[in-house]
Image: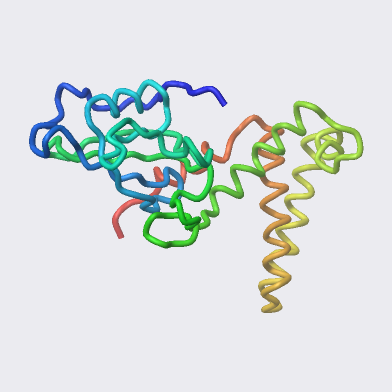
Length: 214
């Protein structure tokens, strides 16, 4: 997979960073961009930071190898950069990245022995991408295709039906059925979003705007 430069807008300029405080190195905390789970700590000199910015993959200065070291260069489990920020003293970096696999050399998801932290947004994002792809390709035999073919009224009707079934499951106190019906409701709602040209992010932005103190 070819490397691509990071498109993060808040990448600090190397000229503004205090590399002298630790003899030319800055500690760099790497955090999962989606779950915010801390993945590892490494060190960067100016060259490593520039390589990270240019290549889009987290690259450290290896104190043991005494060379630049791109995380994942052996395993293929790269850390794809989403953003880089400096702290208030300009002597520590916070890198948010998407891991391609287990981060630790011993197979753990993080270098602190933690298992992967699942994030509900990952599932919804993947489902949204799948629905969008089905809408573009309209493959035969796909239930999603049949919904798009039937049109907005049918999709909206299915959302209503699944909403009623979700309410019934809740009133019955049937937790397994509530989980299943809720999943059906979310799926059909995402299909309706796609059909109507809005996104889950659009809805989340409305929710964020409604959030306030108290």
